[in-house]
Image (spheres, rainbow, N blue to C red):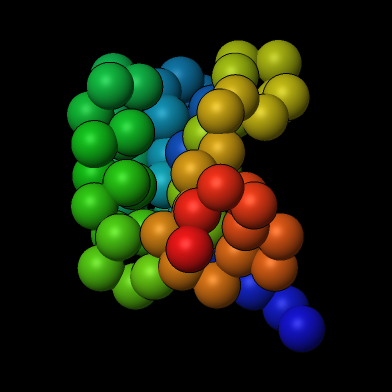
Length: 77
């Protein structure tokens, strides 16, 4: 089962992009990571997808599930 994802990733030309998983193009670009995080989290909530922010080096930083998590925490029903 594939899951829908939304990512906040650094843009090579500066700033931050919000991208749907598997997409080459950004759905929206921001100068500040905080703004990209806010927008990306809201889109992820609305679409029930996994929200996956990245650090400048590309590593994943605190992913968050807004539905469709194939491995939800055992303490959450």
